[in-house]
Length: 428
Image (cartoon, rainbow, N blue to C red; front, top):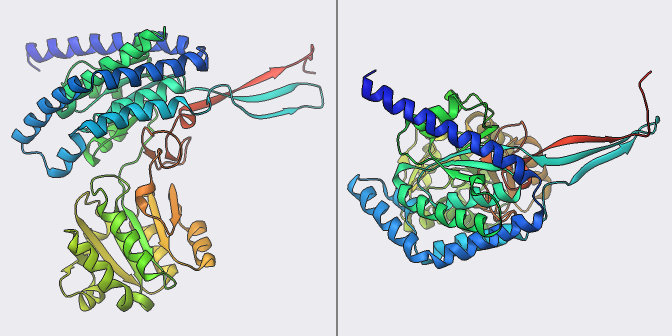
């Protein structure tokens, strides 16, 4: 290691430790702040976002120019770009989260023991959250809104490509906290683009950070899982499926598949594989594939698909496990629902799956047998979103089986403690 790199790393360590220590102190104060003040901060943030919209868009244009010069993909540019509508949507998210019930202090369960002890399980904040994300500057708002609502401090590390946008948005968030009388250290942003800051946050801040939540591409998510020395909430891939059952309505099948794949191809809830029951493949596939092709989607299919849709490209085994995040879809014909479920078990990532069918018994079998975080009937996989679930926003989608699963909203950013009230009991 060169002396210069050693000096830089020492500087990053000092910067990150200072962020962590400030976050820990801020978290203790925020945890006991009443709901009214936290909501007031969210509303003040929304007002600041609106008043600084021009500055946010100017900062975003700086990021966009640099991104285009670097040759980032159209999918990445779509995640990065802001316009007036997206800026307003950030303000609306803050307002929506402010209207949610307070997740802190909820009594999750209560009972009384024969000896008279009264026991309650009560929701409390997680503490300090490290949020690492790429591209989308609106995640800065989502993370801040949900963490403040749930009484958690957060250290944000946005992508280098959205640096100026996220910093400008963060200034609005700080202003809202100050206006509400809450320490701005509740929401801090890593002030450097150096990737060493990510490594330090993951591996060397367990004293300050209680959980890390990544949001971004597979490379980032894999790095977080490999290097984190604190618990991680998130998912690695979004290999999502739509299964067209033998009792699927043809028009519904076409519209659900088209939306699930093409509404936004770069989101983790976008469908990547379509499974079609053999009994209805000849009936459904021409219309479904025509709609996909007209929308600019490349179709990769097995032999049966290609016999029905000659324009389809031949799919291979790698396609069944692919997360394209692009206008590409893999289509496979399966013998029945059991084969569809077996395919999902083998190739899926546990994110989101949908069955299109008017047979409710088949849907119930799908629900019971598919162990993904989100399972739908007759609806697009792109509903895999905290806002669509009524959570106001989300900080990510979790596919693990510990703690949160599915969209991670304010409630999912709490844990619990036990409160026990006695009248002088002692244990024999």
